[in-house]
Image 1 (cartoon, helix red, strand yellow):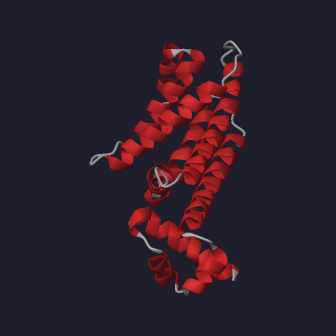
Image 2 (cartoon, rainbow, N blue to C red):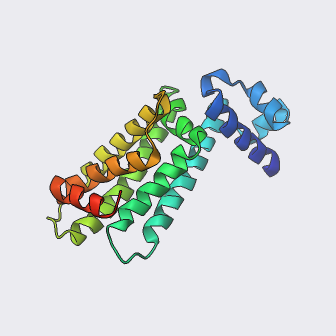
Length: 203
């Protein structure tokens, strides 16, 4: 039963991430996973439950990668946000299925899915808030409450990913990372310092 549930999860990830949630029926998922409808309902009560499970799977993996990247010991503290953003962007845009599910396919499905989507953004906002405190100490900037800053930056990052998914000529990952670094560090250390340090890091 666990093996069938895993196959359904993998099929949900593939189909929702390529064909779109609205276009994929339970029968389509079952056919792709090689299981029956009875097996589906043993694992998930509804198609929406499967979508939430896929969303949880993707965001848990990406969040883990980001936290691992931030935990890497570095000689230059300025590399911490570089590592964190790289892990985040590679986790989503490295596999467009992941980005599409998180940023597009969960929008407007239901109030329940929207609450989960918002909770996911807030989880990443807290990670940004935590790292903002670290960077403020490094830059000897004024310590303050970065909670709303984290929410704003998480929202901006989400919209930038949506732009990349929908653009016929999406920007490269290094360019996206550079713009986000300028935005993040600009709010913490100031625009001039952010531009100086991003240039010094060769980004």
